[in-house]
Image 1 (cartoon, rainbow, N blue to C red):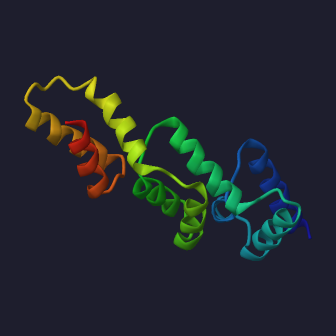
Image 2: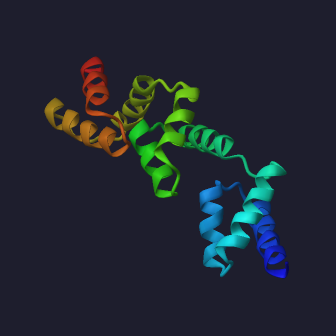
Amino acid sequence: MTNLKSAYEQMVRLLARRRYHSVELKKKLLQKGQSDKDISEAVERAIELKFINDSEYIHLYIVDQLRQKPQGLRLLKQRLIQKGIAKNEIERELEKVKIDEFALAKEALVKKVKTIKITTPSQQKEKLFRFLASRGFSQAIISKTIKEYF
């Protein structure tokens, strides 16, 4: 019981600082030396008490990331997958958010154009293409955005 109590107390301390997905929380507790059984029981209890809500975490992560800077769905998915979250969970939440990726790409492009010092249109297009690709936009979205801008 004391190990479970310890796992639960550590979990509560972690959740007091920031929001976690259950997968992230389990990894963090494992790093702190808790047993798999104690972690599972503590996380299950936290879910029951609504301390953890995985779908809400994903939704808020997506909204927060898009608020910080315009980026594509590929980058958002990649970052969530790196956190250990299952692709099907991510896909389900992305469908709920209804992201206009083309509008986000246009927003990013307009901001970036102001900072580009290159004068030839072909060099500018190339630089913008690389920039939008690094932000996780698909090739189709990038091409459409650049064509519309020029």
